Amino acid sequence: MREEDTVELPELMGRYFWDYAPGRLTWPESRHTIVGRLLEAGGFDAVRWLRRTVGDQEIREFIVQRRGRGIDPKRLRYWELILGLPETQVDRWIEAALQNPWYQRTNA
Image (cartoon, rainbow, N blue to C red):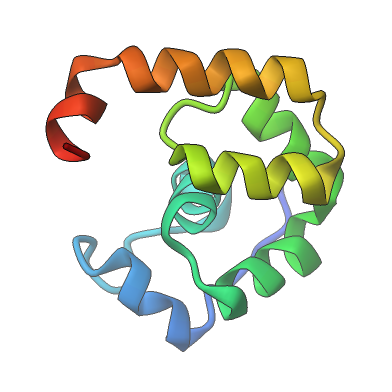
């Protein structure tokens, strides 16, 4: 998918973006926000839409670029399996997340 391509979020995705005004998220400008939120909180429908829309390669690049930050360790394991991410790399990301004081505070 080209950066300038316009993508409209399906109406059912609105529940994942409850904290944004309707129509405020546009694909080119909010691409990372959309991808990140759906990777972290999206259900099966959202993940299926995301994979069809951007493809596994872009999802893989997004996760690697961010070193898994913002994605729960359980979901990181899921994406490791689905996308074929290197286990040792994901192990390091998860260890960093588990050591993060914010993660410890919110997941205790």
